[in-house]
Length: 73
Image (cartoon, rainbow, N blue to C red):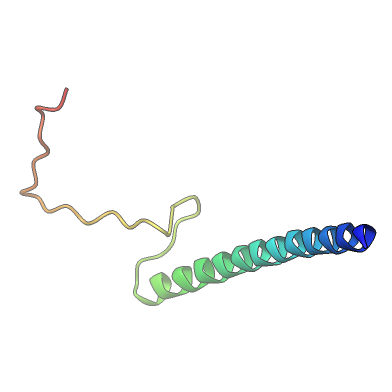
């Protein structure tokens, strides 16, 4: 009875590790695809992608009137 419990526990742990690895690989592939889509969209919009440039730059565009605060110490 106890051996069956430990056997099932080991099988459950191995399957959990495999599931995590499969999800991680899917995230990697998804990020690669979205990077390719972003490059394609930028080239179609007339803003070419330069190698080494981060395509996932979500910083807001700063206007010319923006002045950062200097009172932080």
